[in-house]
Figure (cartoon, helix red, strand yellow):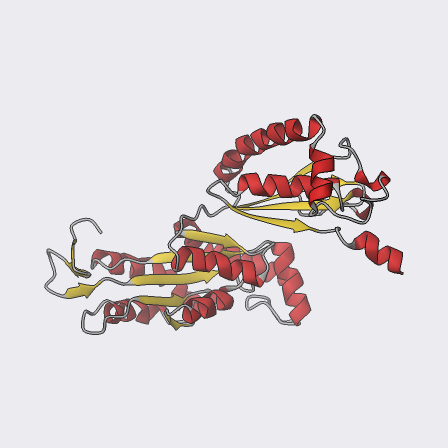
Length: 314
């Protein structure tokens, strides 16, 4: 913080004689059902001292204890969410007091789309904490967004779990809080699919690659996939393959900063061919490999790669 002096892991404030120990203090918050409990458990497994649902009135005192040089706790994390009720309105002043006293904190906001949250609640047969008895889940979700929106605005890190597997979510947390890697708050999912199985509903960009040579008509290649070297060479050895890849990535490079400017924190790029097994998989893998060199978090999903095999067995 401005005006503080750091020396050998300790913080000496000019206006305060209390000696502070240098601590990583993380506040985990976000949407109910988005994965806050998983985040807190992951941090605990990585050595953080964690407290779930700490009352707002105790946060400042907890921070003072964590920063006490006699205790020397290196990493602490607390979760704060809608369960705090009316006291949530006091959080801003509480955090301002913590900052004023020279203690630093980081806010992790765990986000998720409304549709995915509704699906998760229905699958677990749980009620949203803000849904009135017998009311709609989506109404509770919308009310929660209004109440905790200020925390998302103040967040240092936003992780959208809409399209993330649990292991992928945990990996992102480790990158940020254990490996201290740069995190851009933006996740790109590159998804291959087959048009005959339908376009992915959560697509932001849909690209048709059925203009590329189709390995399906080569009997020796038909049973292979775009994950195999033979298919990749077949698709990319034509002039159009590399040329398309360069032009498409140039478009993505232009779009991503503008999506971020508009407040998006995730992008789903869907690449389709007829069956989602050869051409789309090849191009999706190539796009994924190139985008991995960017500062964004990138993942690849092959939605329909095995569906033809399942249909044939039936």
